[in-house]
Structure formats: C-alpha cells, structure tokens
Image (cartoon, rainbow, N blue to C red; front, side, top):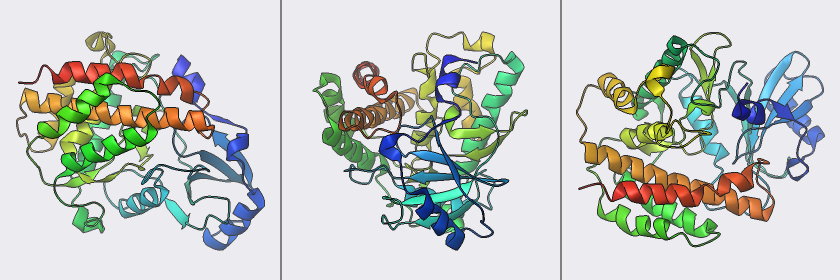
Length: 353
C-alpha cells in the first residue's frame, strides 16, 4: 500500500471539531430515508479537505453523509446542496453516481446542512502512479477515467433538468473572478506569482464553448472503482460542479501529469508504468468528444487557469487549518503547496504566445 493510500483510505473516529448529535441524525433518517431502521454507528472518512464525510452503519445497511463544516465559511463554498442535486439528476445517465436519499438544509438538526447517500463499496485509489498494478492494469484504469469524464461532458444539461445549474456564457471569465475572490478571502500570506496570475488570466481568455456539466474536481481519488475490475462505480465530490467549459474541466483532471508526487506524475516514466502521456490522454478525450483539434497555447492556458484555481483551493485549506476547522489532519501541509504551484503556473503562463 502506498503512503497516500494508507494516509487517506478508510475511516477513523469522528474528530472532536466535527462531532454532532447522532441521535438527532438517526431520528431524521427514520423520517427521510425510506426503509431506514436501527441504531447508527458513525465513523469519519480520513480523506477529504472540504466537507467532512462520514460512514453511517445501521444493521446491514451502510450510508455516507456529507455535511458542511461548522464555523464561518467562505461565500459559495461547501455546497452540499449542489452535490445532492447534480447526483440526483445524473442517476439515469451513463455517468456513475451514488444513489442519493435525502438532503437536509436545516442546520438545527446536526449543526449544518448535509445529505445522505448510499455507500458504494469499492476501491478509492489515491496515488496516480497506481503502485502494485501491472502496466496493462494502469492503462485500463486511466482509459476508464477518460471514458467517464467524456460521458459526463456528453450529457445535455437540459435533458436532465440542469439547464439552470450555472450561468450561461463567460465561464472562464467568471471562474477567474470567482477564484480570485476565494483566494483573496483565504489569503494567509502574499504570493507574488499568484498576484501576477490574477492580473494575467483575465487578459488572455480563450474563446467560449457550449456549456456542459463540469465536475470541477474530477481526479483519481474522487471516483470509486469496482473492487477487482477497472470500472468506475461512482463519481464522488460534486461540490464544485456547475455548467461550464468541458475543456477546463478536463484540463483540471490532467494537471496530475504536471504536479509532483505525492499526488502527481511529474518526473515519472509514465510509458513504463503503462499510463498514457498527457498528449495521448488528451487525444483520446478529444476523439470521444467528436475529434476537434486543440491549439497548444489554448491547452496551456487551461492548465494555467486550473493551477491558479487549485492555488485558491489550497489557500482555503490553509485558511481553515488556521481557524482549526479543517476536515483533514493533513490540512496544514496541504496548504503549503499553494506557493510552489502558483510559481509553476506563472512559469507556464510565460511560455504562451
């Protein structure tokens, strides 16, 4: 088992800052989850930096609860309501999602909004190098991720009742403005490269494309693979989903090729591992989406934008760690990645014509 797999997989006792009234949750579930009965046992999943996530066991049934963290939250962050809505909408499409049961927006029940869904049993893989697998197995797992994100981007939002799930048009422009605000709201120290990106990004926007449902955080550890097969059973963590540019969503997914270990593939011999190079992985996705060509500079912009977006997310993690309400014990170290990532993004931006 890799270090990341050991560090983030499985459950632990509920952290004191995330404790809640189990009896109140149990009573709510009896009223809102069909067929629910019995006494709840609650454990907290180790992984996750944003919304605390819990495994609920009652007899032979297992559920997962996602809740907003306690305390003062950044504007529009921790949107469990949106997670619930998009997974319910995608239930009958080719995109694998857990079955969701009920949403509670009444903070009086356990202290913050939450929803309950089925627990999908399978493998969550944390190391993109997929240690312990043969090259052919790694190739199959990456091909499956490529297939599933393309399937998501192929869904017409209107056909699943999500035509109003995001604002139409100017997606990248609005996202740059949003993550600039989020970064400023969570800023813990000045980072010169981040400030440079805040100035540069709005002046180099790519051409607009038709909006599709975008996940916002599609990566290896946000999907559940079948226990033994390279098949995705569920896509998780839809907090950042909206209507937007599918290429931006795919570029975020592809940042793993640019980021160092742990969590990235930069410096790894991906061909020896059986993992497709970034360019080949992009080509397969574009084939699935109709075969349109993509300019190298445009692709680089999407990567720069997503690196900046991740800088904003990391700043949020660091901010919550200073407040003492981060959901992961590794939050402080995670937050420290903001500066080198901003510097990497600014270096890539300067290569664009």
